Amino acid sequence: MRLVFLSHQGDTGGATAAMVEGIEALTARGHRAEVWMPAPGTLIPKLEALGVAYRIVPLPAWASTKGRKAWRLRWRTWRATAPLAAALRAAKPDAVVTNTMVLGVGALAAEAAGIPHVWWIHEFGREDHGLEFAWGDARTAAIMTRTTRLAIVNSDAVGAKYADFLPRERIVRVYYRIDPAPAMAQAPPFAPADAFHLALPGSLNPQKGQDVAIEALIALARAGKRPHLHFFGEGAEGYAARLRARAAEGGIADTVRFHGHVGDLGARLARASAVLVPSRCEAFGRVTVEAMRAGSAVIASDQGGTRELIRDGDTGLLFPAGDAPALAARIARLMDDPGFAARLGEAGARWAGPRFTAGEFAAAFEAALVRAVQSATGVSG
Image 1 (cartoon, one colour):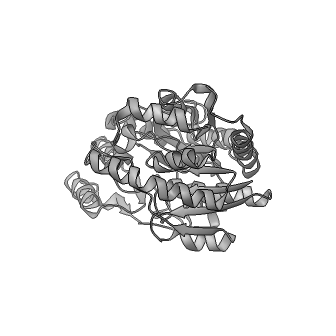
Image 2 (cartoon, helix red, strand yellow; image 1 turned 90 degrees about the vertical axis):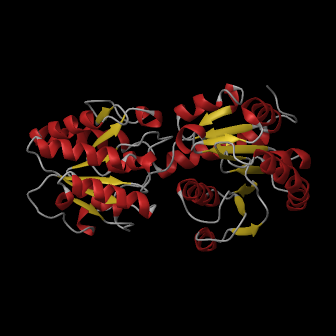
Image 3 (cartoon, rainbow, N blue to C red; image 1 turned 120 degrees about the vertical axis):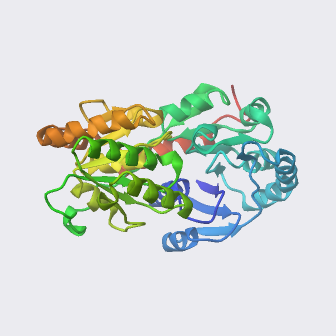
């Protein structure tokens, strides 16, 4: 197959990282892909390393936070559709894959060019990013149903959300590839060595729930327990400053550390006493699986795709999203029973190990795209 992937950005992030993994899997199986993006960025060196062609083309969004400037988004999408359709006709791919729900122009242009369109959806949209469709849900659903052969989603939870936009039989769940964690020796040990160390990976923003973790540690300190909390990720400095200020106010500044971005995250997760994933909404939960594959006990919020990954009390612990006292209670449980924490980590590693492999991902992703390309002329309901 020859495929054109449309990306909403030129930088590497969650969705674009998955796209690169998908292209790598397809290339290894003899397929050809190129990426069209609205601006250059850190994605380009990764594509060049894979020998994947790319173009910079106008790709306006059709969703924004709280529906801002909806009329402008509709106009930009309409104006960009005809030029993009002409470019797709000239490129003659077997299918167009839009790598995000943020873009609608790819579906409209592919329809105009008579080329099968596939949506690869990595997020809820409204629930996790506060995004609203410029045409509203009902009209957007009609456009998606008319233009799209298949939607690939990263969790059953996301699939259930978009069953309101597409016929359910056109939605296929394909879990990401999550590579095994590197040996923990590749990361420096946590200090002090005799403390209970919690790792919290992810970009610093309120949706990821770092503030909930801070409140949980304050509650634990009041109860005489002082685990150490390590943030791995970057984000808005204002939010990071508020987290630091709250930690200082709560008397736990000496047990909270901000590491920023690190290249050896998997090894650090393997070294942690437990890994926290307190997100208020998580479409899939990549870091949850990374921690499980690293053999660490995971405490995660009970929502979104995370429910598909953790069996509470067996392969990890769940708590109600945003509930700091509940999170504190689960941390205390692991601190009081290191053997239980070890059993959770071992069970999580056994469950995640055979899943999320490069082979499983490549086969499922290829099969979904082949199904879209080989579907009958015209979208069947």
